[in-house]
Image (cartoon, rainbow, N blue to C red; front, side, top):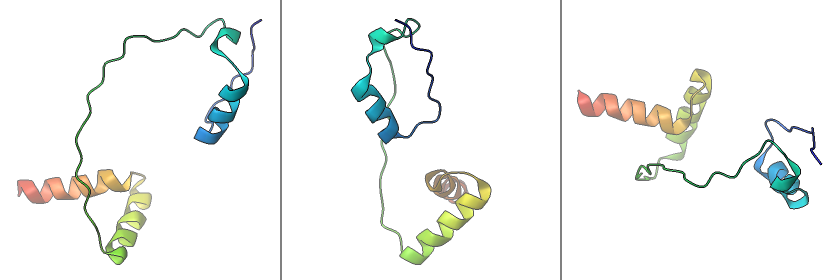
Length: 81
């Protein structure tokens, strides 16, 4: 029996609840992926002053990018200078 209900942009909690009550076998067009290749990027986390962190968060929201992306961009510019 094919279900036509498609949920887009669900949160992790909504997805968890959905899959607690559903199974892949209920969907004809869903296939299990068996061979996935990915590359993990190692990261180093550092402590930031709370005031600096708040300024970074504000600037990242203004630019519509993540805080990590903004910090990496700034540090890359400094490192290459």
